[in-house]
Amino acid sequence: MNKTGIEWCDMTWNPVTGCFGPTGNVCRYCYAKERVIRFQGYELNGQTTTFNPYDGLAVLDAPLEIADKFGKRRRAAFPFGFDPTFHKYRLDEPMRVKTHKDIFVGSMTDLFGKWVPYGWIREVFAACAAAPQHRYLFLTKNPERYVELAELGLLPENKNFWFGSTVTDDEMPFFFSECHNTFLSIEPILAPFIVTNRQKADWIIIGAETGNRKGW
Image (spheres, rainbow, N blue to C red):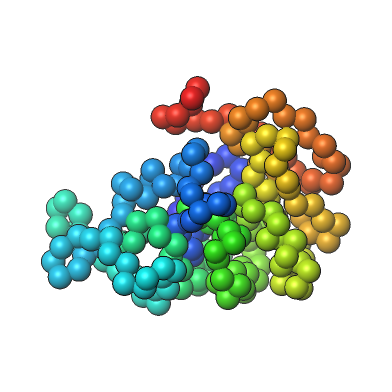
């Protein structure tokens, strides 16, 4: 897990990284892919590569390594670039932090993308439940997956679980529920926005686009 400058959380945690995007393409305003490009790759036979031997969704029980420019070896944060990867060895990280933190789960992915297996999501939920001292903030551009999971009885109703929907204009759907904590992240605002049914969202985050693309 990592400390973060994001105003609405204390730490980010990425047991899953990478994304296929909501329609098979990465979102045009995706900040995560740009960051991954800076830190992608791992060492294989003395060479740095992003080769993915899993032919699709990758699952790692142990971290791969990469050498920095000084030759010091470290864990490879994004060994296969932006290919979706389940880092199972990270599942115990919340338990290691004993004091309460607000944790953004999946800042470098969309954990509720249609391409994410149920098994991955259930294991992440179980790891969160095993460390109840924290508040977990989930965020997706695919709120329909929340509904699907809820209908299957797989969406936890834990009071320290918060389920957020990213919306950039008022045409996008969002998730609300009487049984779950829900929030909206209106970031970045790409069009005039009127929040309807706002009484059904427990929390609203509003922000403009930042970084190299601001004003785009």
